[in-house]
Length: 248
Image (cartoon, rainbow, N blue to C red; front, side, top):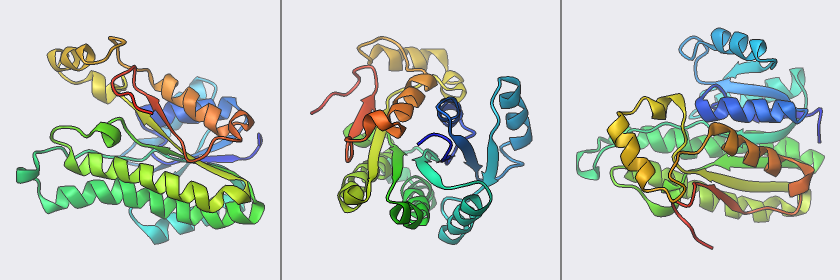
């Protein structure tokens, strides 16, 4: 499947950047999407990645907007190449107790983290079905499996991704398309490492491995699921959480 296009939403983020690098190393032309090139300082990110030896294409896409997603996907298909891999990595948090949660913060998280998965996947799926080939990988969260205090919106959205993954995998399996999810635990991105040290230490104390995960460890899992080695894996969730939550 190498030499095809991998589209990574939220590709400029801490985990998204590592996923983009891994897929590039695996031979894909990587298109990383961002909500706003100026806000995300896309030019700086592109220059930083180029210094590290990576060249990416950055496209703007509001994943909450179905029409915008469709137009961006069509543009990529026409100007870059066939999208063989879609990684739904875009996500936000708006944490608070439910009793204090504004409707806008519920809507924002569900629109980005769950509706965005539908909007992007629906936009890409017809192309994949025509080619009878593709990989769809949804970046969920351990908190979509176990729930998390103060994150009813985020946990609901990430749990919804699991249901979406399992259902869609059955619809497209005969067409050579796999659909899987990856559920990171606490990962040492710049955003997480900016949290107060005492809070971080408390989080780490809950993890059996006694450390946070590395963004590259999520990227390696995505790289595997995107590869031919994972051709018989679909409808699965791969937890990458250091033992924070286990299930079968």
